[in-house]
Every structure is written in C-alpha cells, then in structure tokens.
Image (cartoon, rainbow, N blue to C red; front, side, top):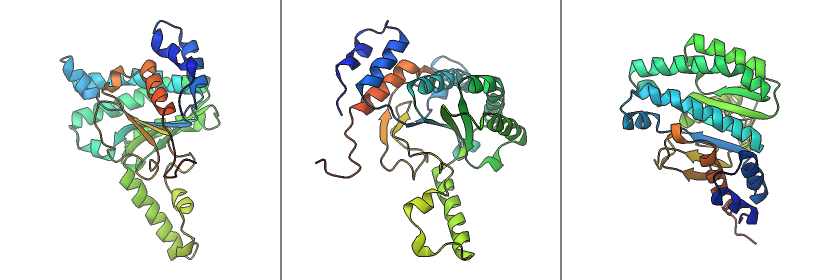
Length: 262
C-alpha cells in the first residue's frame, strides 16, 4: 500500500506539531494494531558516551515511556516490548540486579500514568524466575490496570520464544494425555491458545533497534507474517519521530501473507 499525499508532511517539516504528524500518519495508511519491539542498544549507547551500561538502561526507560504514550495516541491496540530475555540472566550479576531494581522502580512510578492513559499492563514470560519482590509489584500493577481498555502493554520478562512454544507443547500434551483433547483436534488456533500471547493478535510490525538483523528468540510463533523493520538507532535514541518512520515504512509494505495479489 502506498501512503497518500498527506504523509509527506512528516518528512518535509520536522518542526510541525506532533498532533499534526499523527493525523497525517493515520490518513496515510493503516496503523499497526500490534507493534512488537526488540529494544536493543542500551549498552552500546552508554559505551559511546563513556558511561556504565546501566546508564543506557535508565535512558531506555524514557524511550519506553515516550513510545508507549505515542502508540496509545495513534490507536495501537497492543504494544509488546522485549524487556528481559531468558538469555539476559547470563549477564553480570551487578547488571541483572540493577535491571531488576530499575524495573521495580519504573512499574511502581508509572502505575498512575498507566491508569490515566487507560493502558493495561501484562507480563509475559517465565515469571517464576523473577525476584518475588518484582512479581509482587508487577501483580499489583496488573490487577490495578486489568480493566483498562485503550491499549495493552506487554512486558516480555524472562521471556524466550522457544520457552513459550515448549510450555505450550507441554500444556497440549497434558490435555491429550488426560483425554481432554484428541491429536487430530490440534490446530494452529488450538496451539496458539496455549501461548502467553493468546489474547492478542499476532504483531503487524516488529521493530528492532540497534541495527542487528536477528530475531533473538522473540515471539517465534507469532511473527510468521509480521513485517520487520530494523533501525541503527540505539533504543535510548528511539523516540516518537523514529516510530513514525517505522510506521510509514510499514504502510508502504504489500502484505500478501504468502498469497498472489489478485
């Protein structure tokens, strides 16, 4: 799909006010219903500035805040952020502990903002691996925002796509073993209902910051037909104007889902 003539306004004048940019973007083409983001480059951002890696994570929180707010304003229904992978547990203990404390502080601080903006928080991943203090805070926030309708914010914590698929296989196998499900009844829809993302549509757009061209074990089942956008911008530099560029690129894509366009 080609963007209509209103979309040029975003490129021609960066001084134009943000609400006008958003309206032009909405008129230019479809806004993704579900955006997933691999937030990469916090450490490299900090290293470029001669700072500790954790400084990049703190700055990255500002990008999370700005992108979440912008997605809600654009009408995105679901935003899934790859916040902490199962592989991240192998990072230095000091960095992992700092990340957990940052997550705890951020969720506590942003609860009122989520409520004000009618955003529902969900955590997906192997949450049993998370510190109990973090999970208590996350659960309180999830319970508080459970009835919010404007947008769902998924934080993928201690998450891996392979873990999610294996966990779904175990659930399906148990149902077959107990006679609740017959093997011939296992379909894409049935299997998908056992994934941690079962209540959301598959992502329309996957954004990866930091310039790396890999999926990094993220939403392996769900991104079968997701459009992928990679930017060299490190996550702490990725703010709303960078998001607009990603969505504009998405609007130019011809999404055929393996079919021949008639």
